[in-house]
Length: 204
Image (cartoon, rainbow, N blue to C red; front, top):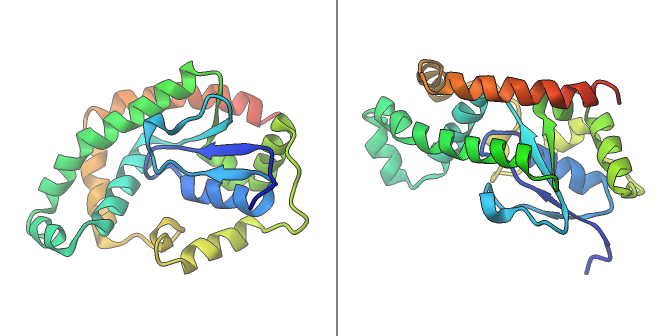
């Protein structure tokens, strides 16, 4: 049984990089990690809460791709005859989820939003930032970001969440998402928050 005294909740929209964030923290910091699986109600006021903020175009495309790959084969077979229908059916739901996480990250002071760029391009600084801000010790044996990505890729449950060549399905999803007009407003909201986050992250 874990003797950790700190709990970190990692909770973001599907496609935000949450699994990488979760595993990087789990492999390096002496804290219990909670993964509410993208449930907006999963944040815990008395614990540490981290939400990864990413470009909505990337979030929607990645989230839809991951969701499609996980559905039963019968549903895949149905939608494979009309991929546009599948994407169009999922877009409003994913965009709504994205807004809800974005808005909570701005309004609730017990949520620590971090940019996807900071997490993925400066993972060591990200870990140091979280460790220092919440007074969490590092584990004796560290696991690099590269090793963490390899571990995710080797896990059949999450292998599609590691960086890889884009599939034809993902390219198709990207094209539909790019032309989805409502995402333009979400992009402006994201860029405004990203600027605020990076003003702090760039100083670390």
